[in-house]
Image (cartoon, rainbow, N blue to C red; front, side, top):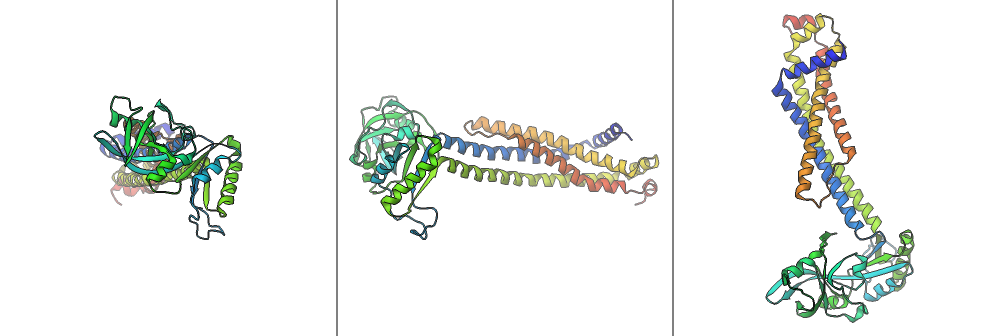
Length: 399
């Protein structure tokens, strides 16, 4: 029996049971489609996080209060001394630091006339717009002055300005943040979400004023932009040394953007593999379906198998015929599954265009390889069982 005859025989057998063949192919297609779609979502989540961090710039350091690692001075970690405005000014003077911006955060109600809404309020300085690469569409950002001086200027996010002022210009108008009156000096261009913040719904006020409103003496973060990406580690050590000199303890954590990107990327890559593994369970179920169908086919076609052996077909050729049927089911199901998964990703991106869901090339190859492996693995036992059929008993109707 030639390869062409073998394939023709296998295809003919599958065509003889169209409904059963279609349902088996559908099982494989759903499994492969799930693997492709979930892998695309996991990969999309990883790319989304990486893009969000990349938007911060490649030379960014983030100073957080508290030491992540256990040290001799702080045996159980924790905050020994808060980050202050004096710390911020000292960090800004460290060699290699291009810009630095303090952050004090809270939530407060912003009012204009009869309209009001509760929004996140960030207290910072003029350099924040540079460090975070924001764009001011109208007016200007906060004025440059001594961070200890405070002030009552406010910059509105795009949505806040639109909802409080509608089509009129908010520049020069007075809004209330809690009990305080602020003069609007600028409006940010639409930016969208980033790292948990919706910049369109934020308002920015001078850092000292924010600390006074929220009754705080410490900063939430200090953002540091370095002059040269190649000196990131050097600048990070200098910042740590400066804060150690001021605090007399290792009680801050300085992380780079690259470290955060790598950490998140590793986590989301593991999540992608986990999602793919969960989806692969459906392939296991589909494989069991193939085996069940093939076992039924072997039982139903015992006379046919006996006749083949009676005309000289070897056991190996019988095994290959049934194995070919299983592989054809897996291949067709896998191909349909790739199309099904790609189509579902395309529809998802259509509804959420900002989410970069895409199936990596390796996922296509892996999914198809897994489908073929499932077909071969679960088709091997029925094929071996067919090869062991005794032709005399089969033709006589015996078992």
